[in-house]
Picture (cartoon, rainbow, N blue to C red):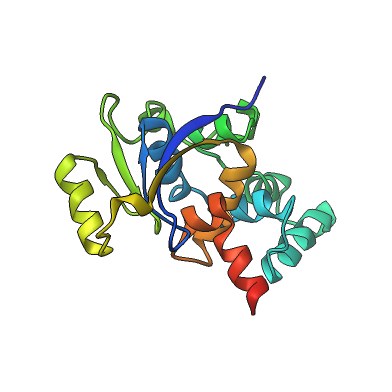
Length: 192
């Protein structure tokens, strides 16, 4: 099964190298909201593959390596190490259905979190709202954009790597879209 890729339109201020907002569809917004449904064990499992997760990574590995003879039950350990992953996240991370906990009732979220047929504005800090002409103009005013010549639209594809970066940066930053798609955080950290 091939991993799903989602298209996302970014409005970028070239002079500040920052994403003002992204125009997103249901798939991307469902992915973002599914992050709120992730158990901490799933976050550690996802991020540990490519990134250090501090002490939580050590805690996760300790439980994974602990002998069954020391545990109340193998099922409890398995539930902590392999917690439920929401449908939208499984699709983007190319994870099989088996990763979902069997005792979790996820029927109510199978269709996602937001309705089809609407466009959404996702701010750099991951705030989400319905998009409209008025809301777009309000954002330009908020960021004091006087010259629309400094704005550029860029379409990006969001796949597994970008999803993992969004998850990681969402716990460290308030400029997630800029950090992930423009390398802004990486550039700022190397400047210091």
